[in-house]
Length: 394
Figure 1 (cartoon, rainbow, N blue to C red):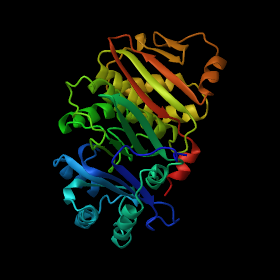
Figure 2: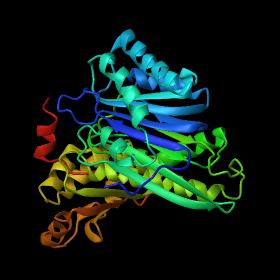
Figure 3: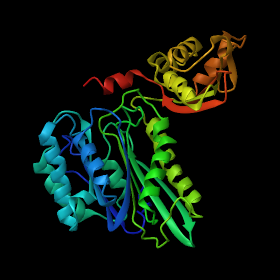
């Protein structure tokens, strides 16, 4: 699927099977920079967070990275001191392969919470990763990141900076336990641009807020969610900062990659077959619009109604009402796409068949106007089907 995509200059990647997953599928991935790279990261806000998240936060203080090493199948979360030792051992073993400091290695894990990592499989797997790393192994890397994902997720952007071609390649995994601030998702973003570390961190945080933090599949926030970005400067441009003339196009390209990956995650939601955009306008503030939109997007009653292709606008009104946003029920209007279902808090005379036609689509929008101010927000979500339950019964 992604066989034509190559990594940015100075990067290699790999995906292999180390025997962590019982089915023998790929379960370890590597992103490696031949040059020291500026590093940026954004992590879960869950108070219960996995050992690799704690290690990554610590290593990010160094501001420079050479590699990201991850495993899928086991989350290394709620594993106590042994889990921390395992995560640090992964970093130390990877650092030996490169000849760098362990704090220049980022470690990520995703999968089941509770089990300890099988270091007897992971340590040899690290060697296999470095031995097999190539600029062209994009598909293999994305595939190794998957858990309940049905397909790998990669996004690419290119732009010109100082007459030089700069490339951004991003990976992501995620299909369930998705609710910002972020989710059981991992994303690794690489670029051969030279970028000042402080500016890079600020740019990544802003791009995440406009993308990964705009999505929700099931309202469950994970212990492991991590977005990491590396910029190694191999393109040869002068280091970009927020005052650079090429900063805006660079940020737009970074945001594009993050947004495309986020949309791929929602489209691959566990058991989902509908992509739903929830727009809230005219709230008292953007923050209150976000509260209302997220309440609608996370309502199980709404998600099941969308699965049943039933336009139950009463459930939308209800979820707006119990959000923490200020609302006046007599001012609310609701449209399914551009079909007005509710005006001034009451149903319109629109034919039910017109609303059913909208929710029968695989992609539609719920547009809610609170008529109170100028605040706006958008959340991207999906429906909830019986398949979601089947996937998550164990």
